Length: 226
Image (cartoon, rainbow, N blue to C red; front, side, top):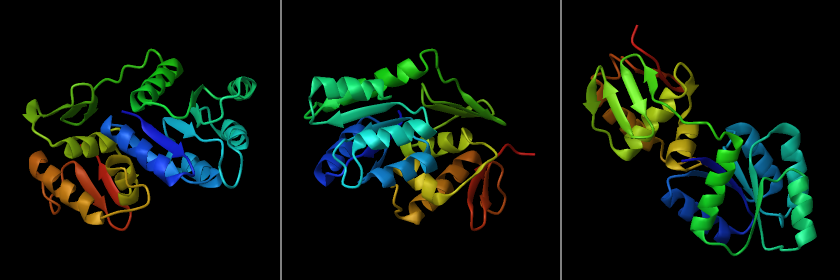
């Protein structure tokens, strides 16, 4: 699973890409303009960027140069332009891959996995441990003090996201974006309900937290018991 930023002005194409990648367990953010894309890149630090060239405010090639000035995030250009010299120029300018529209969803998914392997070929994420909690992303297994916890997919993703940022306060908006793929907000109660369910499985309550600590007006923090 990767955090993917899609910079694409065509709403129909954006929707199709979001649907395809979400079905393949990626977390997807979208931006309809170059400047929105740059802001999302800086704010959310995605794992990979899918970049259209025909953007309404700046050409994608200009945005690529701006991205490379601030980040080494993998960038896959996705465009209907199939000029060979233009493709080579963009790859030389810092793009990691180039995919000509139209393309199959499985092909896009394979390109994403390929560029991520090239960025860190030896990366094999191990279990995350926070106190007595052990969260293994590869097997999607969670244990608490040696006992297996039965979690729903979203409960697991919420817990894993917080565990990777143990000790940090994470806001609801970020959780909605990263866990529920709702980058522009959504139902805050969604987070509250899942936190409530997680608390029950962790053997705690809001009044007597062990792992999940609410910071009023800011967000949620996962930390080991004292």
